[in-house]
Length: 369
Image (cartoon, rainbow, N blue to C red):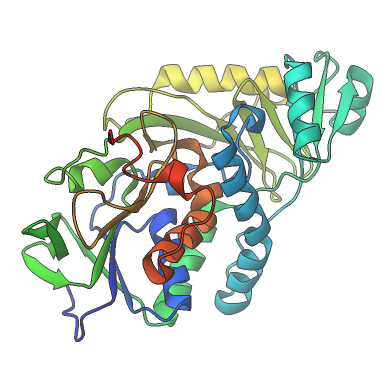
C-alpha cells in the first residue's frame, strides 16, 4: 500500500456507491479524502444492483425515503453528464420509464401518486400491449410511470472512481481493515497493519459495516441479504421500459441486454449463486415477457444488500464514538439514494446542519432518551 504523505480530512471505509459519492461530495466542499476498500472484495450490492432510480414500489416507502429518493432523482442527470464529460465513461442515464403490472392496490397507489404529483397513466390490457408488445396481452393492465430512470451501475462506479483519482483522491486496499479506536474516539483506520490517521472517519461498507463497527457501541446492526440476478441478451428495443410486478423486474439496457431480478435470501455472507434461483428467475422473466421464455441467460450473479431492522439507512454521527460517521443500510435502494445520502452526510460533517429527513436516518434513533 502506498504511504500517505499528508493526513487527510476524512477517511472513508467503503468503496461502493455510498463511499464514492460521499468522497465526491466532500471533495467538492474542499476536504482532502482517502477511500479504503477490501483488496479482494465480496459481491457488494453497488456492483450487483440493477440501477433502477426509484424504489420498486415507492408508495410503500416511508416519507423520509421518498424525500431522499426525490433529491437523488434531481441530482442524477447532472452527475452522469458531468462524469461522462470528465472521464469519457457513459453510465447511460436513461429515463425509459417503468411499467408496473397488476395486481395493484389502486386506491393506495393512486392516492400516493396524486399526493406526490407523479406523472402516471393507468393502462388496460390493450394499451399495455400497444406500449410493450413483448409483455403481451396476458396481463390485465398496469401502471405507466414514464419518468422513472435507470443507470448502468458498474459503469457509474467506474466513472466515479476514475473521476476521484483524477482529482487527487487516494485509494487504498487491504485484506484486513479495522477502525483505530482510543478513549471513545476514532482517529483513523488500520489497513493490513499500517495505520492511516484522519480527522474524521466514515464507515460506508454496506453489508460489511457491522464487522467494521464490531468494537463500537451502541450496535448499529446491518444484515446481509443476498440478491441473485440474471442477464439475457435480446435485440435492442425488445423491451422499451422497465417492467415490474410484485417487486420482481426486468431492466432493458440500450444494447439489448435485459436484467431479471431479484431474489431476497437470508443466507448470511454466502454469495454463491444457485440453480434454484436461476430457474425461478427464468420463470419470472418468461411470465413478465413471454418472448424471453426460450432465451438462455448469459450471466448469473449475486450481491449482498445491507438491511437494517427498520428499513432505513444509518446516516450521520456515530452516537458512541467521537470522530466517527456512518453511511450504510440502504438495502435495495443503494444506487438510488447514494447521491442524496452523500449530500446529507456532508451537510452534517462540514456545515453541522441537518436537512428535514436527517432525524429519520440518525444512528441514535433507537436509543431511549
